[in-house]
Amino acid sequence: MKASIHRPTVAKVKVGNIGHNFDRLTENLPARTKKFAVVKAGAYGHGAVEVARELSSKADGFCVSNMDEALELRQAGLEHPILILGVVPTDCIPLARQTNISLTVSSLDWWHLVQEAGLELDGLSVHIKVDTGMGRLGFRNVEEITELIEELAAADVDFEGIFTHFAAADQADDCYYQEQLQNFRSILDQLTSLPDLIHASNSAASIWHPDAVFNMIRLGDALYGLNPSGRELELPYALLPALSLESQLVQTKLLDAGQKIGYGMTYESRGDEYIGTVPIGYADGLLRAMQGFSVLVDGEPCPIVGRVSMDQITIRLPKPYPLGTKVTLIGQDGDREITVQDWADYVGTINYEVVCLLSSRIYRQYIE
Ligand SMILES: *Cc1c(COP(=O)(O)O)cnc(C)c1O
Image 1 (spheres, rainbow, N blue to C red):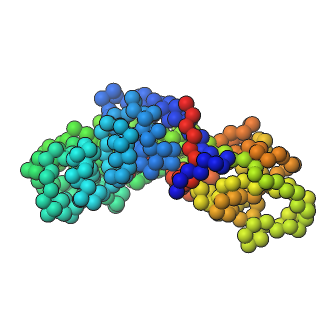
Image 2: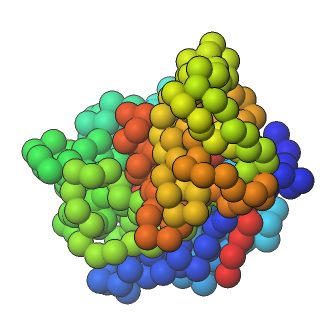
């Protein structure tokens, strides 16, 4: 979907805040620790290329989830190390070698497909993924890893890193985190050769579990000023939100009592009510479940009344406002602020999902 630029709905991204958050999150780490920024999914909706450019002098490399996300960074001229965290189709291997993009090997099954494809492999860089309890990607036993390491060496593949991923580094109860960390340490202990890069920390582990740093970290959610635990754990320092979302009133009307609003007539005015229409809807990532949530006009909360449509919402205003009046959907207006976490709480999800769902139709404006 193309960004709609002829529309007052805009996500303003303060990339400088992401730079600030990067500094804050990494200031206590040893200088030798490699700090990778996770910019998958369009940098969690903030814009992968813009965020990577902002971090280009700070980050040691970038993590993405697939080949296309990696190529987007290369095509933008970024020459940093890039690690693809997901499984790529084996036919991506020539391109990965050519563009110097590191791949994750997470099973022998995949490695055997690579061998059967008879591709040239020398110079390819890989990280081995260990499944210490996430149950998603990765090797669960040392014998398989040892076998893979030998075969990588025989094929002249550069064994650059080994890593795991935590399922619960963002929870107050750290039992499962500790179990995974133990598993990872025990697997590392049993390997006869270790690569340069050993990493386990996502944002949550980087913030609350400094013991899992090894010599590289992968920072995602927190870079964007979001708390990876939601409201469960408090951040030890303030992070700056980077994204605000604004639109404008494109129509207002005064309805008397008993007038229906929106698909399914789920709302009926109770007395004289000023209703404003705002050009943002579920096609932008403002879910239908947001009905009833309050946005800000002139510093005042105004509830979304009636169904959220594909392209518009209707809100109840305390008084009439002129067309073009600013509507704040995420961000600050006067003394009040709406956060990404407020959206997440309202629809029963996590802040990650809210920012990822802000669709490409929303124009992103980058503010220095
Ligand atoms: C997305 C992802 C991260 C980043 O996680 P955050 O919680 O956003 O910091 C790190 N590692 C892997 C494997 C991931 O998939």
